[in-house]
Length: 530
Ligand code: G4P
Image (cartoon, rainbow, N blue to C red; front, side):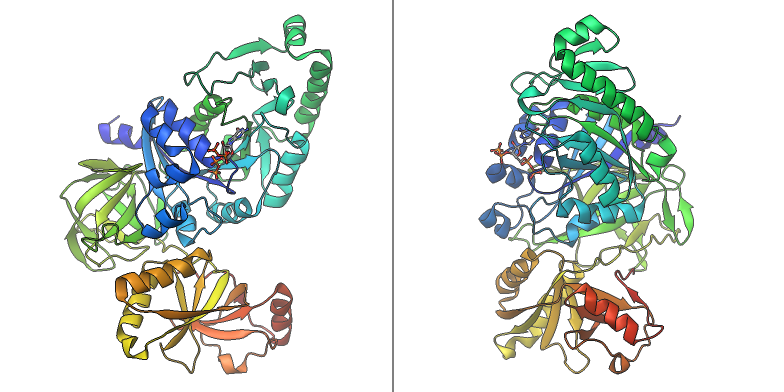
């Protein structure tokens, strides 16, 4: 095996998704502990300080104590080179959160055992589901009173529409938490709180068949209950099937407690075996093999003004194939010319270091003199790859935006277009209005604040932002549809996006149904894939 193949095959690039407070940060911290990043792990913890340490780029983040941007953490464990894509954890997440999932090869979904599937998990899951990437479930906080385990796995199956296969099964929860039963080795792994200890702890394994030892440990009643639960599980839950996992149709489920570091090592070990190395990507229908093809990458995120003094922009790209070497010339497909990727860097919590080389699966940030857009492809000179664009995610919040000082129209348009180009907001227009007044759509409401803040700070433009009641956006499939002839409900709004595509905004689902009824043959789409 060539060195290149070896390097690429050891990459595991995944995103951790969860509803805020389910334990994503704590789990990430424990993962890092396994990679020997102990100092770092300490700094990831604790809301007030942690997220800052990880991505501390925008003042607004500092003020609010939340992470607007995402970052990437890289570490080595069990001969794998792991890239964790951190998704902003606050409720007010943005399109960036979704886009980050485009760069991942699999996702780890953290669920709070007392709460089950929560709204943000549902949304993020939907995006993973569309891509068909493997999804792994970690049911967390078993050291606290949890909901019934069958009820939890049922809920995941029903609400998210994915089959689940418990790899282990909890024995009690909260004060009565005794550990987990490993369905493959048929052993009980005894609960131990390793929070204060070292990473591995003293994991004690007891064969369930050893009646005396297992009864001594968990008690007769708990053993009886466990036996009947295992019988039920063996009869009712699907068998583990790697191919189904690979296609995102079956999610392996693990129970544990990130805080006490119980079940994290077991999870990481199994997960690294079950998840895939960098997946091939499609370029205009052709498969781009991560190993056989030379360097290629796509831009999934642009971060402006990371360093205020320099007004710089950094374009984050996911390397899809081959090897990147600092200073190399690559072909920027959308720009139609060769460019030299400047100041390549990798993020490591608060440390940004320059990289000399990186491989398929890795994420690098490069200095962007303003030439890149989200979704752009880069490849070796002489090649003309074109990765599918990053879909535009349906905004859920809308506001009418206009500038206070109409004399500053130029700056307003420049600023708002720039921010839209970075993908932080989407701009819509009414047929009869120009750019003086636009409707802005965002995925997370915090983006409105970011918009206001950035226009003021970077472009010296004050805006008036009037929130609108719409919650649903639908693009009209037939782009030539005459908007004037669309008859909908009175609370519907007709707009166009910057590419001129006609779309409708609705206050509720009911209006969508009514509008479809009233316009025979019209097809509506929830997303507009570029
Ligand atoms: P998030 O990134 O998904 O938002 O969650 P985070 O890890 O910050 O965890 C949210 C809270 O849940 C934290 O408590 C954390 O300590 C706690 N937690 C995480 N995993 C477990 C677990 O397995 N068991 C128990 N009992 N608690 C867990 P906090 O009090 O909000 O913050 P902190 O002061 O402890 O940092």
